[in-house]
Structure formats: structure tokens, C-alpha cells
Image (cartoon, rainbow, N blue to C red; front, side, top):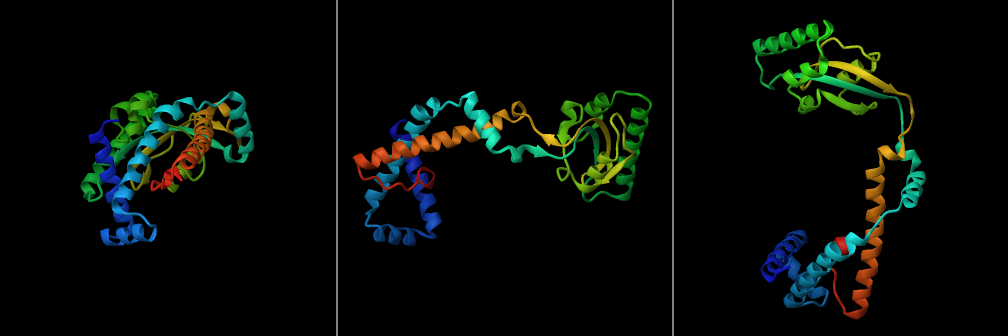
Amino acid sequence: MNLPEVDKQVEAMWTAAEKQAGSKEKFEEQLTKEGLTMDQARDNIRKNIYVRAVINQKIQPLVKVSDAELETAYQANLERYRHGELIGARHILIQVPKEATEEQKKQSKGKIESLLKEAQAGKDFSELAKANSDCPSKSRGGDLGYFGKGRMVPAFETAALALKEGEISPVVETQFGYHIIQVYGKKPPGVTPLEEVRRQVEGQVKNEKLQKTVNEYVLNLRQKAKIEILDPTLK
């Protein structure tokens, strides 16, 4: 990390600290109460930056999570991964502008009704979605993955829950526009397997281990030299 880069970060953190205090004057008053001069405070910020650089470059790469640790963390938080019935669905969305005229609404509805007829006639739903949907999911053939209650807007959720596997819904209207939905799978209530939430669990365990290592590192630094930690994420 070069000096110009450090100086830039010092100024950014200094400005943020002043803003958090409410004003430059209030920040200076706060420093005075803590027995710090402006130069001492800036020096502390600079030290904090170097500490964080060491953490990112030297400590973080060393934090590893074993399979045993993953399993332990997963089992300890099993309720977090419990779910009700899940529905796997794809959809096609034809958007309706917020200030759409009645004619525009009519055109959008006509388009989705035409697509519904094609899907009901056996046209591949995914291909229809890729070619026509206004939703970003079009790149995946309209696939929304598996979801449970409370994840989608009410009208969409109600229509999806009413479908059997393989069925296609009639036209559904939401605040986003007009949809047709195809359900491709259902999963009964249960617990999401570790493999499906592995990245999430690993991230949580890694963050906990990293924080513990950082705390030990900062404590060691404090024992060697009095450093006021201004960055709250390092406290």
C-alpha cells in the first residue's frame, strides 16, 4: 500500500468521522474529550488502515473452514434452514409502464394472452420466456428457482401455489405487469440440505473465525503500543 493511497483513505475516514459526529467542530470537541490532538487522531487512523491492510493481505487468506466445522455450524442452526413447501417455477412477464394508457395495457395483455396460447399448445415455455419476457430471469428461461410462501407478491404466490407440477397458470396481474407461470416441481416441508446452503454456512463460520483472529491481533497490537481504534469494525 503506497503513501498516496493511504493518505487518500485517511482523508476519507476523517471526513466520515466528522460527518458521524455531526460537524467538524463537534468532532474536534470529541477528540479533545478523549485527550487526542488532531495529529494524534490522524496518526491513529493511519495505523488502523495499516492494520486492516495486514488483516486483508496476511490474516484473511489463512482463515480456513473444515468440513467438521461446517457440519457443526449447520446442526447448531438447523431451524434456520427449515422450510415449508417449496415451489419450483418459471414465468414470463410482460411489463406495463406505471403511466400506461388503457391502450398500452390492452396491448400488453394481448401479448401475454397470445404467449399463453402458445405455451398451452405445447411450445417450449423456457424458449418463450427467453424470447419474450421482460424479467431478468429470461436469460434462464424464466426460471425463478424454488421459493416458499412470502417470497413473491401475493397475486403471483396465490396463482403459483394453486398449480400442480407441469401446469401453466392463466394470466396473472401484479404491479409489475402480466405474468404466466409454469410450475416444474414441488418440495415438501423439510430442512434444506447442507450442500445447498454450504456457501452461506461457510461464509458465516469464516467471518466468525476471522473476527476472532482479528480481535486477537488487535489486542496484541494494543499491548505493544497504545492505538486508539477509530474504525468500529475493528473494535
